[in-house]
Image (cartoon, rainbow, N blue to C red):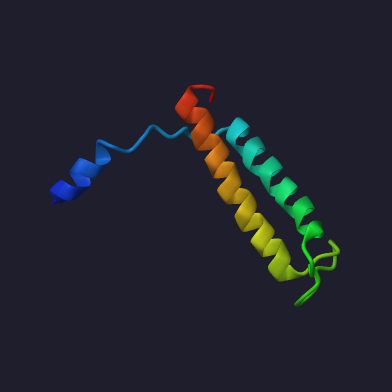
Length: 84
């Protein structure tokens, strides 16, 4: 049985888009920008190094997390204004 609190919260949740190629491109580009910005941090090579990129694994994971958060914000913002 669904609690009345969940039912009340379900009516206030804004519309979110389904996954499509546009959403994927927005998330991918924001992650790429976050990785490129990670080269500007003071010590990007602290920790284990990635063999492909000249940054460390913790820096890469942090950049990907930040990119996803920014991308989600962009997607929800564009959905809210009706552009997506």
